[in-house]
Every structure is written in C-alpha cells, then in structure tokens.
Length: 437
Image (cartoon, rainbow, N blue to C red; front, side, top):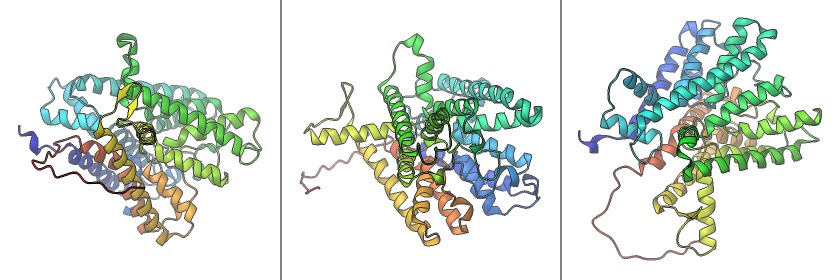
C-alpha cells in the first residue's frame, strides 16, 4: 500500500462529517420528535452538537425530541465521544481480523500516538473501560433516582446522563434548559457525573497508563502533565469561583452546597452541565469560565479546548524565552521544537477562529458578552451558555455548527496533521532576522 495516498486527518474529518449528516437526516424524520415535525436546521444543529459532544441546544431535549430522537442523540454522543474509527476498529478486532496499515495510521492519528505499537490493546481497553465506567454511573444514578422516578424513567435518565457525562456532552433530559439546577446540593448526582466527565476529559492514553500503572510502575511525561494541569485548573477554578460567588450567586446556599457548586462549576469547564444559573454569576466569574473553557481537557479525550498540555507547554515556552534558554524543558526533558511550533499554531488558530466567530455572530446578535461566551463555549465543545443559543438566527446557528466542528476536530487535526509526511525542502535559504515585540 502506498502510504503517501493515506491522509488520516481527512479520514478523521470525513467520519465526523458523515456522522453529523446521518444524525441530521435521522433527527429530521417525523418519529424523532414528539410533535412529528422538525425542521432540518434544528436537526442539523442538534446532530452537530451531539456528535461534537458540545451540548448547546436550540430545542429542549426533553420537550422536543421523542424517545427515538433521544436514543439517536445518545448514539451520536457515544460515537462522537469515542470516535467512529474506534468502533470500526473494535468490530474488526472481534471478528478476528488484523488491522491494515491504513487503519493503523488513522487510529494513530486519532489517538494521538507517536507510534503504532499496542493500538489494538488500547482500543480494547478504551471501549471496555468506557462501557464499564458508563454502566457504573448508570447503576449509581438509577438506584438514586429510582424512589422518585420509577424504574423505566430512572433507568433511561441514568443511562442518558452517564453517557452524556463521560463523553463530556452536557445534554440533559430535565427540561426548560435548566440543566442540573435541581440537583445543586445533591452530592450523589454531583460527584457521580463530575467523576465521569473528569475521567473522560483526561484522555484515553492517560486512562490506559493509569490502568497499567501497577504493572509498569511509570507514567509518561504527557500523563503527568495532564494530571497536574487538570488538578491545578480544578482547584484554582473552584477557589476563585467560591470567593467571587460566595455572597452572590451562591448566597442562598448552605456552606456545604456552596463548596459543591463551586467544585462542579469549575469541573464542568469541559462538559457543560451546570447546577447553578451561569447567567446569574458575576462578570468576573463568566470571564474566568471562558478562560477555563478555552483551555478544555486533554488531547485524545472526549473534551475540547486547546488542551491542558498545550497551556502548560505554552507557559514553559514563554518562561524559556524570558529566561534566555534556547530549549523548552519540562521535568528534566527537552521538548521537541516541532511540538512547540504545533502548540503556538493550535493556540493562534483557536484565537483566530474565536475572533472570526464573534465577528460573524455579532452581526446577528448584539449582546457582546453573550456572543463571546457562546463562541468560546462552542470552540471548547463545552455547552455552557448565557442564554443566547435558543435565540440564534438561522445564520447564527450555522456559524455555531461550524465552530463546534472546528472545536472537535480543528486544533487536534491541524496540530497532528503536521506530524505526517513532513515537507523537507531541498533548498535552505540564508537566515535573516525580524524585529518582534
């Protein structure tokens, strides 16, 4: 096979676009809605949001979509979160067939692996762990909701929200666009869902290394950076939110619920569930949330954003420049110049997309803060909103759809695509200097 004809980035983008299109067609059929009618744009927006595991919705998931529509949304979330190629590969494995070079290259690209070693084992671990984790969350929530909901509703709600949480989708079935505001002080719901979406945001390779830690006794630099960055953002975000909102949005809550709500709002930077009304928070808190959403989770995870490793690498690059060091070093390791270049590229393009998104959306909507918050949320595939989503114009919806697709595929694809078939020019021109800063 001629590997020069293989373009993993195009195949990855193609698989997601195909899922969005198929989901939109299914959701536009009469059986998918409770009224029997659904316009295609609403179906397209919902399909894109579910496939890109974002959670922004223009139609109330509980009120608008029938049980069949909700099942379609759940399948899109599951496939979008783990990746279509992951499921295709798993079926190839269980059928007893070997992965060919093309399939291995696409998986290597999708999973952000530097080599093709152990891809089949990683896929097995990924799917088995995901299913076990989601079923564990379903069982806990089912038993918790059973006394008030009854068997059928408790099971469906538990399954839907567990899958939605693990894949960092943020879709809910509680209606009125209130997300989880009815469970602000419910420690079972808060901890169960937050553990699910935090785990999902760590990335599959980090989870794989954690599962193998007892045998290997080591974690890669990547995994250590992800765990450190995730904990740092969670603790700092929680502390700042608690201080800012203690006598404001959290004023009516007992102190234990204040801590729980602050923790959940900080953790949900990758997911989009909310236990308090985000629009009721202070402007400073909303700016903080935009920063957290922009960062997002880890590479190769179900979350979006520029990624915590990108943030840490960018910070160390800046530190190296100011300290006069030629190399970027982290934990006694020298970072490859190519990774530094990709970091700067991913951040730059993400900022540019946010700027263009705000520019385009502000033509349709004139509340600047809501527009910026919406665009950052879509770019980070988070799903938090200040209430703009439901009033989006048709053009505004299409803009957000494109931004969600970029958020799910853009930074990752652009960053990883540079690692394939590097162009080594035969001509090297004389060096010159340009004034910067």
